[in-house]
Length: 248
Image (cartoon, rainbow, N blue to C red):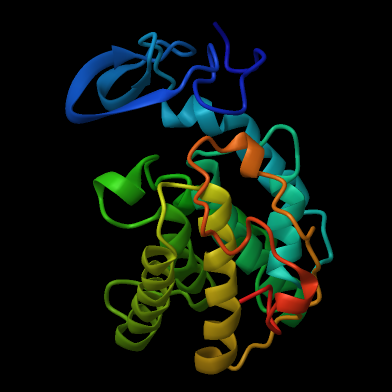
């Protein structure tokens, strides 16, 4: 098989059946590229798709959009990209999406970042493995804020203040994601991460992103997510109940 073949956008990309998450790794080959590796998730019929093949089409969508948009609003960027039919309901694509959107919005707002910075954010984010939220205790979307700050401010392990800022931003996002409850939902965690990034950049870095984006009153992903959390704040939100920023 080739990675460009038609894929299911929910559950297993091969057959559409639910995924099984394992406690111990097993050896499997990717159905698309044939790479054999120890893995912790496959579908009920035993199909496995590696992160690279899973995210291939989505990463191209993220690149194309971020390198062509003039938007200064990171929420607008992520919502428009997530609405593309080539972006799966869940997956490591979202780990690249969050830093890409933040760096893109920062570039367009301040002129202090480049297209190369956007690409670097994508490249770093896509290395965060799928399932990190459950297996590593750190959602890749939340970690994506740290990736964005690191890229924008050129942080390294030897830059104390810049490294600290990245850590604090990630900690803030992961706290919010943990408090939101429910099983994994890449759309919810992406939205929370962007909300936290907007607040953190204004408070800690004196960068104020616009917050004008208005989404639908009802989340358009609820029906696609078999684990949709009934208490999720995005599930069915009336405009009158929204806060000032993105319904928070």
